[in-house]
Structures are given as structure tokens and as C-alpha cells.
Length: 199
Image (cartoon, rainbow, N blue to C red; front, side):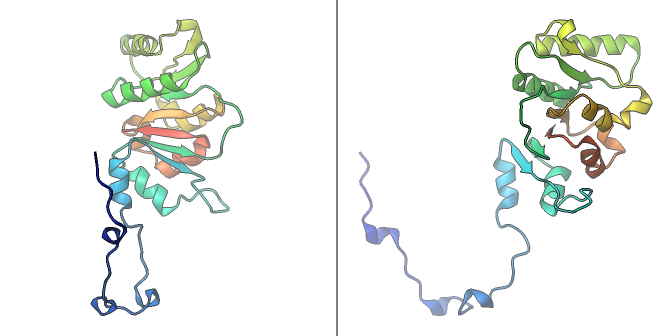
């Protein structure tokens, strides 16, 4: 059995002269959230809501930029809360991170709901191999999943293509082809959907 601590053991008194200030007005302004980096490192998932306060909607806040630039954990970006739960779509390139992203998307989808998984451009053999991996992870009959390969030109327009598939969550690996040349800020603006980056 654990003994309860007495009330006086829960308090510590300090002499005010031990501090280098008289009131909190004397303290310098904090320029960052103390402990934020460590909290993010320990998190299983970081969710960001309302990522922009600018009227243009083209500018991310500093917290969003920092978390999306080098996250050590999956980051979920919500532009607005959906009224219903549409099926998620995903990008799959066969990498280990993409496999994790695809499993996450599959776990978030309702059974029997058609899903879309975009594949990178490639030859027919590679495309069929990736398509088979997608169907294996989704556990869905081929008729219930759309798995189109992108053309080289469509890779640059992936955000717009995903947006046209509906308002559902878009799940993708945080590294790889779609984000190599595009800025994440521009990608989020064009996607205008909830985004889950898996790293």
C-alpha cells in the first residue's frame, strides 16, 4: 500500500530574493512554446486544425511550418471538420513509409466503401506489382478500390487530383515524389482537405 504524502510535503517555499525579478512584467517575452519540441517527439500523432489565419489562406503559421517541415511522427492537418465521414484516399509508392500510410488509410476507412489510392508513374510491371500490394493491404476486391497510376504530368497536380476525389482525408508518406519539388504549403493549399503525413 502506498502512503499518502502530508500536505506540507507538497509545497515548497522560495525566498523571493532568489529570483532575478520582482514581477512577471520584468521577464523577457517567450518567443517559443517551452517544451513543444519534446512534446512533439513523444507524440504518436500531431493534429493541426485551422492551419491558416491569413485571408489569402496561402500562408501557414509558424507552428504548422515547423511541425510539417521535419516531423518525427505522423501529422494530421485539418482544414475544416467534415460533416460526414467520406472515405480516405492515399498515395502509395511501395516504400516502407508508404506501406505504413496505406495501412493507416485502410484502418480509417469504413468496410465496403470505395477507396482511391494513387500510384507513381512507372512501367506496367511495376504498376501491377504496386496495385497488387494495395489490394492486399486494403483487403478489398479490385472493384471496390480505384488504384490509378499517375502520369509524370499528374504528379505535379496530385493535390488537385486528390481534391476532386472528394472531401475525405488524404494520407501519404511524408517523403517521396509528390513532395520533392512542390512546397508543402502550396500542396496543402491545392489539396484543401485534411492531410495525414506519415513519416
